[in-house]
Amino acid sequence: MSNDALKVGYFVAGISSQASGLATAIQGWSDAVSKFTPAQIRLYTVQCQQKGFTDFELEPPAQLIREPGSWSFRLNRSTALKQRIMHDSVELDLYHNHCIWTMPSYYAHLASQSQRRPLMITPHGAMNDVALKRSSFKKSIIRWIFQSKVIEKASCFHAFTQNEAESIRKSGVTQPIAIIPNGIALPDVEDSGDSTTLGEGAALLEQFPELKNKKIVLFLARLHPIKGIDYLIPAWAELAKRNPDWQLVLAGPDGGHLSWIESEIASKNLNDHVTLTGPLYGSMKQSAFEAAELFLLPSYSEGFSMTVLEALAHRVPVLISDQCNFPEVASENAGLICKTETTDLMKVLQQMISMSENDRMTMGNRGRQMVESNYTWETVAQKMHRVYQWQVDGQRPDDVEIV
Image (cartoon, rainbow, N blue to C red; front, top):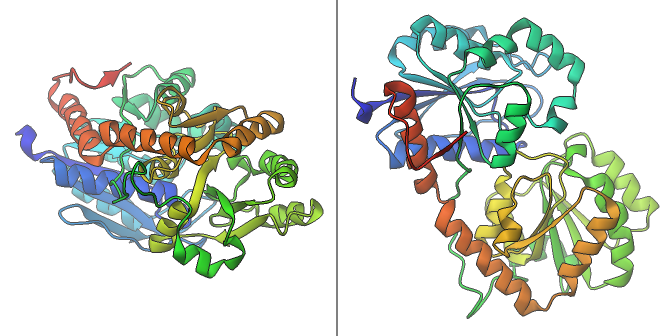
């Protein structure tokens, strides 16, 4: 078999436009590995009719294979997908799970075992401490039924950051862990040294006129408890009093937290200081990054956030929590990092608000330079291909960190 024609199956429970971070990452990896390496990618997923699952497409030559199934307590069962994976298994050189705790991950395991071919796992943050504690009873049952087998038989794990690799190791994994970050397609954004898109974003301002003449702190993620909104809102309640020309924009689909957020905003008299936009996609998402003075993600747990990368690529300085697993933000002076509690968030966010516009622009430019050097899809896809070659033929790559 030639390394130049590896056939790799990607497996994910489902693709939903409401889970934009995972959808963006899966789409990016599938398209990039197909485009920038000789590998042939087939993405297998369940098409559910419940819970907001929607279609999305890949760019040829990557192939998308969807089979109908049911949500079934988030397990995403699909007899049709299982049959398709088993039918195709003889053609695949390597199996790459982009999900755990779901049936498609088990289908991939069964196929890889039947063909005695390697199985990799990218948990996308699902093996971090905070993530493992969520729905822990349900996960203990799934682990007993099938997940332990999937983890034990995997040949290699993939982490986006060193911190995520440490979390995976802490969970009991003994196999090698390759550390390769997510990638991003660089947007065409001018260098802020000459001119800047920061503070612009006409489309967003037209749809939400209350943002005109305001400086925007942009939060863009699912409105879910794990994203840290519970301590963001009380922090903003104090900061809004000191900084009336600044507006907090909470952009993202409801992850079961919207009613609580609306209640908290009303109880703290923040209706004039917080804008809820709902999910933003395409040109409206682009406009939000153009309008933002800074980007904020105070999550309790992240694998490797795509929206942080997007903000950096748009030259927007970022403030993230120490649980976002992206220490390079601070070391490269592309933003600041806070602890996951109200007092520290208030202090660090006020520090960024108090910066001069030129200082924030400089910080944003450093973020763009960091992304250009280390996080383009072409760079990370080629590293991933060398890991695939290692898994299939045994030649360990010398330019990929493996722990």
